[in-house]
Image (cartoon, rainbow, N blue to C red; front, side, top):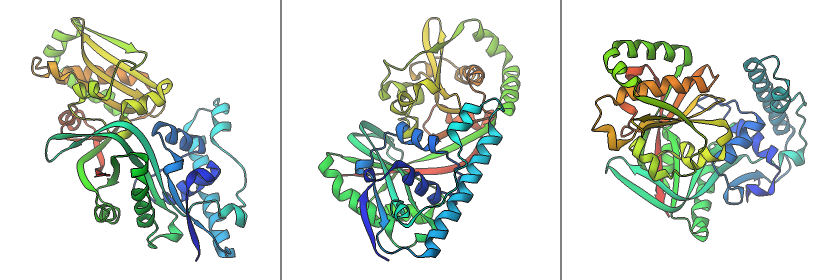
Length: 372
């Protein structure tokens, strides 16, 4: 089988989307991403296709392979279309038109050659910080790249393609004056973790991912506030909850004051700014001082961050109450039936409260890095 390695900015984006949904079709965490959702992912994570690479078929393609691509993609897109149709209101015709397609997949040989059978998607940013959990130390990069997705189409796995691409990327990054390479890998994905360890990556911290049904969370919050009635009543009349229009004056270092730890790439201020029109930012003021802050993506109920300013964490015994009040307020900002908090490390100011509140720790992953 003859293949070639090439950057991903040389192909129409739709073919990269096809590769992405094929590669993650059997991922441990179910991913049903529309084409519009895929474009949003690239935007949020600052993906740079000129430094992202893929492996492409570069030979005569057998009829069996053509059938494989057409059958698999047809089934995947049908499932994604059905998921979208079942999750939106009947009157959301414009949303359905934008996020679904009834087009029959019937790719030609030349089109299949444009689909990477293996790829690495890289984001690129300046001034990136990560936590070295074991050392309780923050590591800063002047310019870093982020692996937003390493995937291989199932039919072409166990051929060493991911290793080949990662080694190629590492050799090219110095030319881009990059000094750090960051990624995340699921805790239970030993094969991928070993791939990165063998490539020279180190584990920086462990991320915990949580979710809970919105209705259940509302029930739990009411119960916890009732159980802490005295503390709640002593605070509630002294606080004001305000909606912020932007995070213009906030840097990543400012948010560390509330979260006690650098945010992950996908939760960072830079990611939030990329989709600011889809984000709701709420704050709690106590005696005219900004005490707590949070941000939620309105469409999917993903809380990007939530925390109490560490300057007040030692003053107030009621940090937990501030978190409960903020969660109760932020639930009104989303119509999503499920609320999630992804990539929370143990140093995070919210970590110790999540189990008490009733969040489900559904999966964990490691953040890894290598200095370039």
